[in-house]
Image (cartoon, rainbow, N blue to C red; front, side):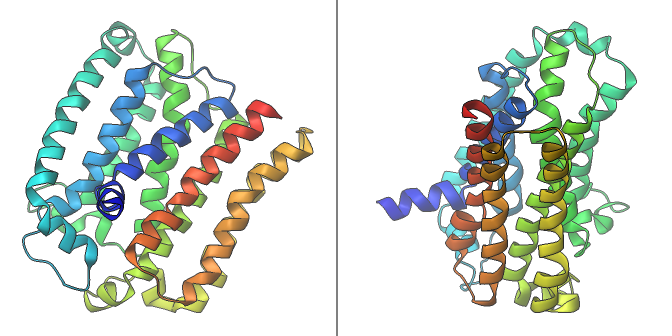
Length: 301
């Protein structure tokens, strides 16, 4: 029973929804912005799951070595019902989110509209527009760009959106602060590294499909030492420069370095092949660890 529940949460992408909400909490707290209404997080939770499930819901044949695709094939009807249910929930949540702010949306300046549309547009282009002209060029098939695209979308959705939505709801002007920008860079780099770890898992498949991910292009060792660890350093470094220069409490700084230390530790462990649940629970679990560390450090210290 526990194994079935775990499979549903991780294979069904519900864990991604939880991580998206947790990282949004973290971003609001770190930027001293009040938390958003309940329906905002329900909308984010449902939209995240629907988006990630799209890639697997159409599976009709599965590689027996790919446990995730096998699981989707065996639970196809359940996941279709899940998608329909979450779509209804997303529409209801969107209604309650927009009902009080639609007039403010109309009056928003161009910068805020750009920020609202930018990240969903990139997310759509990741899968590709369903047309002869554009589907061939979807960002998902660009191996080296793929992790950066995912990291960029996640960074915007969980760092920019929570504060931007509160500004719209409160009828306040939204401006990107230096600290907010550095948090965006930190989240962007953190999640990009997680995506590269998943590319390591998919090395054999990507190689056969001639998808030129970093690990296919330059090998595992160089990917870890020349790509993943430098990105970790950039993400953490941007945060440390600001917090140290602005005299943040030492304990707050230390707690926020924990997820990056764990990230580098897990990166080194990639030399050994892991199961899909390891990647989904441990590697993606670092997003939840990061969110918890950020929330604790900024609320208690």
